[in-house]
Amino acid sequence: MIAVTDGDVGPIASVDGVMSLALSGPFDTAQLPRIAPDPVTVTVARVVAPGFEAQYMQWADEVVATLRQFHGCLGAGVLQPGPDGGEHQIVFRFVDGLHLREWERSPQRAALMGRSREFVTGERVQRTVGVENWFQLPDRAEPARPLWGRIATDVAWVYPVAIVVSIFVAPRIAELSLEVRVTISTLLITAVMRLAVGPLRSKLRSRRTM
Image (cartoon, rainbow, N blue to C red; front, side, top):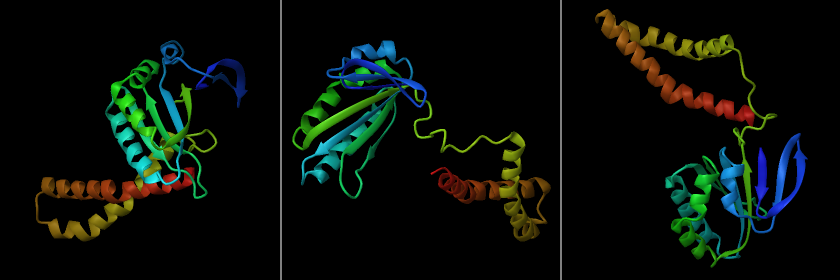
């Protein structure tokens, strides 16, 4: 991982055992293809003039929508400040430094940045290279489970659904052919797992990892 902020090359520091390259002052993104062949995550923190928050949010949504359609962008989002105020942030990621440079030199970005001068009074940029799991820190990520454990968990979620289908649905379709009965049961179980059980599992998993 290489973390870079706007600026000239400064001292190399170690953060949690990972070497980081500190930069300060003007930073030429033409260097990025050489130092960033991996995905690049960019965090832009901005200070918004009082009374212009709504105008900024509308502008930020437009920035994110433009980013998501730009070639090489892996995703983008807006982070709002806390209840006590603070910086507004936009986080986005590109497949590599070359695509990031194309965005930073694009007419779309230039037009958007020109409009931001009306309500943005300060800006701070950080680029992080080579972070594969940006939002999954090692101490918060769900530990990998063995295959048998994942299979047992899946069976535990499917089993109650299969029991319900067998009790309430199977008797009603008992006179149909085997192929039709199997098709109906499979469709029902799949629909319940996809529309109800799947979202519930995701919600419970996210609570464990927050």
